[in-house]
Image (cartoon, rainbow, N blue to C red; front, top):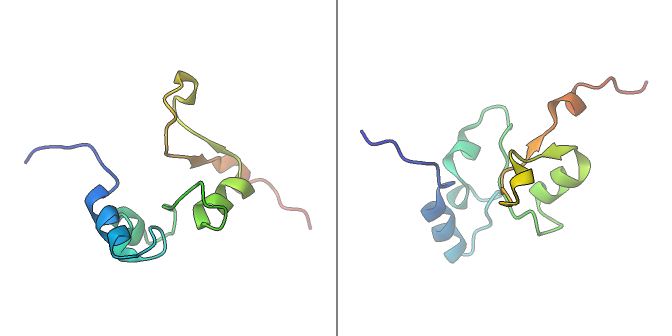
Length: 90
């Protein structure tokens, strides 16, 4: 019954990478919340890899990071929901 901070399933991801799996693609190397999200609203991967799904999402959408102005380089990006609901041409 002790509350702990989410570590993005660090041991699961590292264990999967050690076995040659790709985080964000292979479920055994991806955080449980990503695998369990029925709506596909959570993504995980290497933002530095231009071929990763996360990198493509960051390039194709307006995003923000909470408290980015503090200079702490947060690693969690949020897609701007307003951009998802803008009226599409046509």
